[in-house]
Image (cartoon, rainbow, N blue to C red; front, side):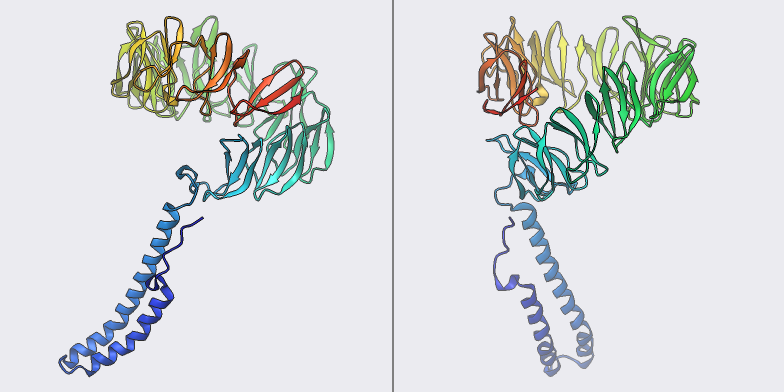
Length: 502
């Protein structure tokens, strides 16, 4: 809700504008009657007066609109700052902190669908998948239930048709919920605009219309990228299949991987290079094959760079095959999304940027990459701590293990027990936990005490008591536990919200 503009007479554009226009001829009459101003100046002022009047009206209007926009942006009642306008202009799914149920707000933060669903998927063509009481259906962006929540499983909305499961059968339905055909498969998985299916432990594919384009004949799952899927070498030939599971691209080679950023690695004559989707070797096979534990690892491109090995040293090339960072490292890997990577020199690790400059000199036995929050876990003299991009110590090197800094509340381990720490490395809880399942997910961390798992918040407060035999994370505000014949769903207060038979 917008805070209203103060109701003062001078805030009314129409009133100020009319006043300016009415006073304009009066001012001209006074000017003409004045006998102290020479005639030449009077003529000039007669010409300029209308221009100044129009300019004044324009400035008043702009000032009003600017004030209105400022109010709109900065004074929202009962809306958190994080809930303000979404740049994508799409509906925003939110979860009520008390009920763990999902609703939808518009880009201005106004609730348009109350928090009453267990889950709401992404909106496609103003339609979205929803789950309520363990059953799935579809709504529009105003909250109208287009297809009732009656299905055991379903996927995100597709305008071509919907694949759902009801009473143990997979169905292809239209947007009104009417069954168009039955799909005789044991399991169906959505993969972009295709559906991978499983039948009798064999895998195949459906298109977005639910038509079978690849019969379930493959013994292992497989995935497509750029319309091609790498199927492995057959003798001395590498084969890529198309979505009809027909050989689309056959290239001389002994091993490859799927395409990434338009190029795929190709092992040939004991070296690796890169091919394009036409099978042309656009980067010569002059780089070393990296082998470990009997497996050959091939390089790939990410953000236009690829980390490759040559004469036993690692460096970086671009898509033209040009060396952009020299081959000088004992080990390296592709850059992170933030543009950093860990390198090793003389058994010590540091971090470089995309220009090859050291952010962190190679001083540490172990060092994680920077992924967020400008913090990296490092090991020095056998103990773990955290450093920032300048090398400043954030958490002292005094723990046997430490992790989770980037989630805002790290864990540290000493003498076989874990404790929750603050971001300066000081214990928030005693060193009492036998295990930490993972760092914080959706505001809660799963920890083990006296053989049972429970959940704590970032202040160390127990939010769900220690009652579970195994550890799992929350997903979309829900914790799922499996028994022999059913699934039990809990909210963030540990309450059972639904039970679903498997």
